[in-house]
Image 1 (cartoon, rainbow, N blue to C red):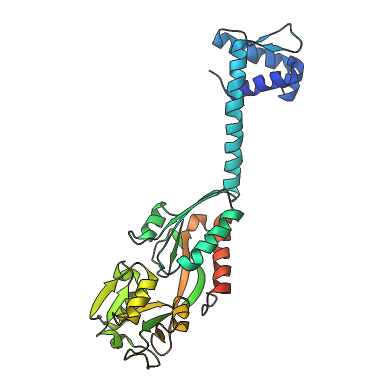
Image 2 (tube, rainbow, N blue to C red; image 1 turned 120 degrees about the vertical axis):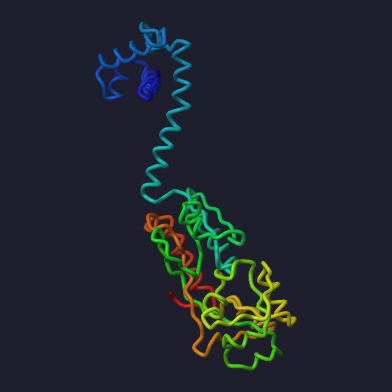
Length: 304
């Protein structure tokens, strides 16, 4: 019964106080505006303003309709503004998860800086310990996944962040500590300490042990990197982590980091996104910020 043009008419009548001025503001003829008002009054069964007053005086129903206009029209204007920002990539949703579970150190500062630059982006993340993030990205539940294991989803695009070397960490007095590098067979009698995720999502199995057909003696899990390092230092096992993660603990003398194979084993860390959103401004900005921050602050990484 009441539509947006009626609400705009009530605001114009209130602001101008005259039917002719209201018609001019609304870019319609006075006759057309009069007809619109009479039609609405007929539908509502009441007068909306007193016609022989200068300026126009709204009736009780007219004031109620004006109150509705003051509530609804700003919401419509705000929604239109938000939609335009989304169309131009200035606002939207960025829900993310990480498969690289050592990435909290650099991800949190990147997120904090990003929030201040893109306040209109609804940003949230989870660790990805308890679920497989890439299928969730494919289905639209997530918008970005940090991963070193790109999979064949035609709907996804993988944007490189940086390259890192996977290294094997052992205790300083471990039998392997004096070697120049570690081969897959060297870990056949070792306990591997990993994060609590499926093997196919772990570099040490995916890219190192499985291709060589090597099975470690045992597997132990922990959610915290620092606990992993403590267990390695206490001869509870060995672990495989990115070189930039191990650098701090090597300098503290807690562990020795060895290359995986003589040539070293370099992997690329990606920001996986849905291809349809790849060029969205706020998403591209996050990827660029993360890449720049990592290349500037993480020791041992290189441009991917």
